[in-house]
Length: 143
Image 1 (spheres, rainbow, N blue to C red):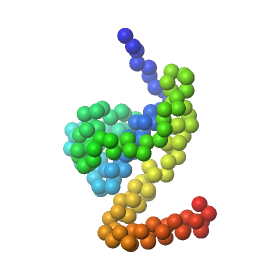
Image 2: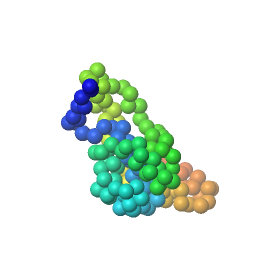
Image 3: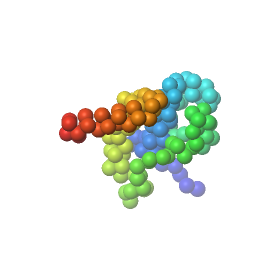
Image 4: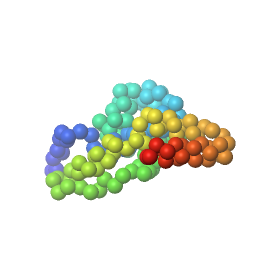
């Protein structure tokens, strides 16, 4: 029988990524953690743990979350960084993979709210001009 090992160096980056996608969609829909928790039968504290990657989301709850947020389960894995570069030490993910996730600006509340508001602009031409404006600001700032 295979024994489970206790992870002592923090949440798994894949669980963090999936949790960040749950959070992004929930915030984009302006849904509270309590409302999402009620929809799937868990507490808001459990939703917090899911979103932080502290607790792994089981398949049934991931399916329920997808339904509550109006997305397919695959949405939570879209755009996931390449985490398959594992060290030889027991399949542990490399520190570089974890750092890549922690430094992702797309997981910030500011980025999520920006994207939500951007897509609320109904006129496609206005959105296109807004995008061009932001690009020119970034170039002018040297970013």
